Length: 606
Image 1 (tube, one colour):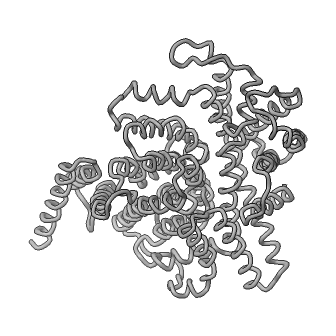
Image 2: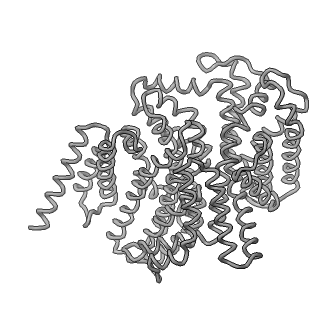
């Protein structure tokens, strides 16, 4: 497994830095590698979740045998006409085996539910012609389905797997290198220096550190495990209830997937699906992501004030001292940001960032052997982290292939219109519900792919800008990490906090309620995504920020002092009015908040 991970990291880093190789062959190499890692690290057996066995090694041999067939016959496959030229018996066997292996890897790494869901889509492709009504399709044979799923770019080796291999992986590798070189500790120390001395310091450190680390980790669960191992015990020592401590970390780590540059890896898929430049998406999403963290930070501050919780339990350095000690961690990040924003070259930027981080590590440690071991460990860790994403994108490709060959996506959009032909709010609610349902235990990229194909087109047809519609899906795909009953980030936090994961999920959802509200805001107010004239953008930011602050105060019951139930209801209604898309609602919300401030000032003076 170590050799596979190290080799895959080196191969994909070389591609990111400009080495040329055949796209399809590279994808089959990537697929064989992630299947190997999946089979050798996860068993799918709850009684023995990890470990290697003879069947696992057999699956590995089968995976490389199937991918080797495609590599050996790559030239012949490149010359044949997909969906026209007949498949050979060997092609049929190799394609069937590869589909079965992807489903088994999905069962092991992601869960049985997703594997069964994909089997349902495949069964629909094979037997859907027997249905009656709008959801029937023309008869499709096994050979035609396999041809479409495996030998075209509309299925297994389609855009989703390409993004995982050529985009996501190099960012995951960058995060692993930065982490192994001390970047995680640097972000934690910087967060502690910024907010650790304030009331509720550990919880605020959790919020800031998770935001910083989440920008490069791309995984809420990885963020929880990495930063939560430090912040959750600190919060518990200070007096936070275990469930609340876990919820703070889960909510903050989930928000990390909403911040550029990685955004839970879904941003790369979104750029490919929508043809919107990556830099444009990243800039547009940054503002909404910051509003999310403003709300979570205010909620944490309110809880600290209400419960009289103090500052960070331990010595914290000054910001300047932290930057002097670890400034070099920011150099590769700055290079990455510059290349993304100025040249819109995220892949090359991430590859160059990896090279810079590795070079600085070698120079600063002055211990070549130790540095080489750290880099080797980062390469292996990157492969381990990226394998579930790669498998999820592969199985998402099977679903997308099934949707396109049967036109089920168009039928689903028509179904949405039949429920609400002119009611965008109803379509958005259905889209949010479907995305959260799909997100039960699935990685964010796979959830995004499915929801983007099924539901986003309906929103776009109703006049929603493409950027806003797809970011709407990205948000709910990310928020599914803390949404009961299968809240993977909450379960990860529960293992550290020693608390009930369902209580953690419920509390995290309350802390992060703005994450469920913001998608509706930027659909109704595209100016929040920097779409429109400057005055409209400033107005949208101001109104939404006021609404977010009012909602946070109402939910936590604190705004400089403890709030009564009447005040909380008043502020909550005012906040909802401000985030609503109607001009009269904005005026009503502003009037409600203004009246509350006047009454409060008079009481304070009296």
